[in-house]
Length: 147
Image (cartoon, rainbow, N blue to C red; front, top):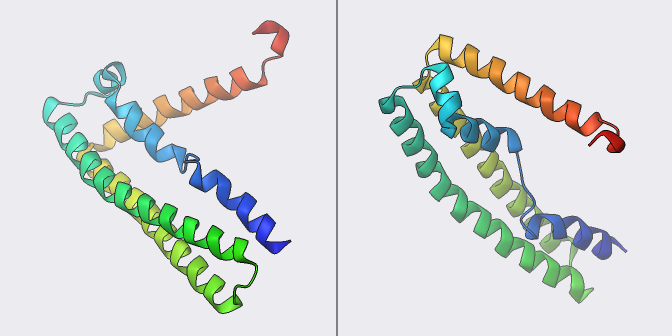
């Protein structure tokens, strides 16, 4: 039973379920030319932000690939039904450590991107993102007959 539950939990991760959308949303928002213009991003700032993003994106590819390999190993162990608790715990700890590295990299990326922005730009961006999130929330809450 534990094997079935763990396998089901891992399917979403292995299928490439999105993680931490706020970071992608933040970077994607900055790449929007209209928003970049609204907050006053210079060409130099845009280049720096892109360089930061691509640097971290390469690291994330490797980390995510390693998580997927470990998840495949985990599924194989679980399906064997003759696994030892210790090997299962060890593999789960490795996966957890990799996922923590992914989160840390995403936070560090965001931190570096924020340093490129002025205080005024960060405030404008926060306000624009807040408005975008409100619009999205409102759209989800509209009755289906109005859509």
